[in-house]
Image (cartoon, rainbow, N blue to C red; front, side, top):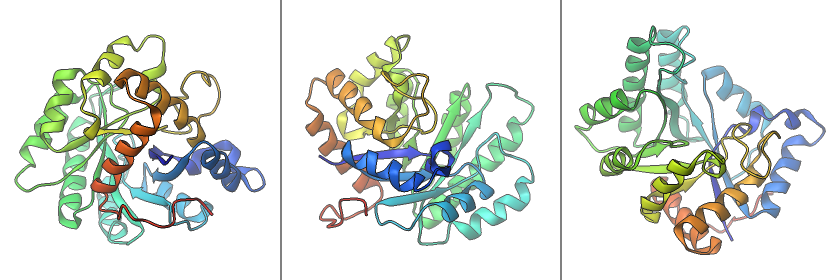
Length: 267
């Protein structure tokens, strides 16, 4: 079985600071069938941290972006973003998007930054990783306005309703579900999962955050993706092996990876 963690902050896990921390995390993931990880950054500094603490591995991909809550020195960081994302080891752009949960004071800057990420993604033909909290109306508006040329990406840790998810899929995006779907109070989200075509689903941990049941209260890590996969497979009324095959195919298609990739295990 081949599971892919489509969104993980591997370099931010506290246990990575232990001796052989990252290698141990990866080994635990591999034992739970997690064979590939997309490591996502939330700032330019965060991207550099990921590069220094994770040993080069063909089954770890990287994304570079500026989270909407990290808008300090945004003009300088936009330039750095454009330079960094030219690198071959950057497979995706983000995470980016809009976050109005705590304040609307920075909304205009967030929108500007979001549009800059989209422009980079279109220019480089790389997927874009989108974060959205309490801002879906503006996210949809910007995605539609910027749709003058095709681009694709992932709606990360989606918690939107079925109608909104359909609009996002129609715009060419994959929908990634995290451990939130396993939470006791997530009945509405579980109903949404049931409506999403499996051909448009990806799964993620968002480690070290959002640990799924039965690991609530513990630091999240990629090995817990197996619990999320089992849970979603049950909702979709398919076996977990089928879900793994479908989500792998989806991810490989989005990132233009060869389905005959020989190196399917972590080193």
